[in-house]
Amino acid sequence: NCEFALPLFQPATFSLPTAVIESDNQATLEGKRLHALMERLTQAARWPIVMPSAQSVARWLLCTESEAHAVCEQAARILSSTELQRFYDPAQYIDAHNELELVHNGEWMRLDRLVVFEDALWVLDYKRSLLEQQKTSYWQQLERYRAACLALFPGKPVHTALITVDGQLHRSEPTEST
Image (cartoon, rainbow, N blue to C red; front, top):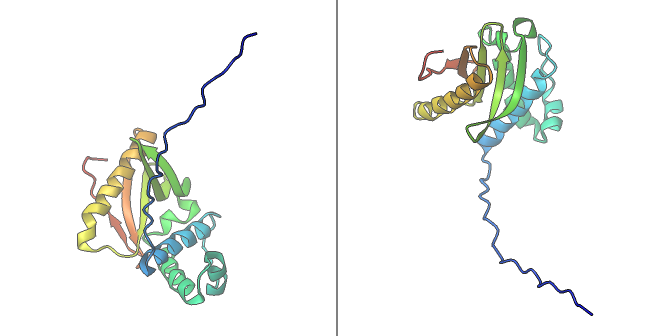
């Protein structure tokens, strides 16, 4: 008679890492709402884009009508800019993607909008404003996005820019030629 027995496995107890959760302030919440609204408005690839009522947007974004009105005005300024029309009018581009998630060199990134033209790609990032002290970090962020797109689309020029809520396009200056 042979008995079979295994010792009980008792792994060491490890504490869970502490999650750092940054609370949203009014500005970051407004920025998130603008991103969500721009994604929703532009995903149908129609032109011109008709701005829904603030009441409808408030229901979509789970916010007050006043908050919805603010982001509707911002989106309307962006979408009514003649300089920016080529990024939103589907007759002017081949393809476009909103909130496109990529991993490049081990870094996860989310591009606000990637627009594919016949001759180039454009990576666009929405910002509420562009203060002088923010430019360096924003340009570095766009350069990382640009490097990721160059790896995905070798041989195709990649341009990057910020779009601010006043409907302005702010082109970044890449560290290497496009």
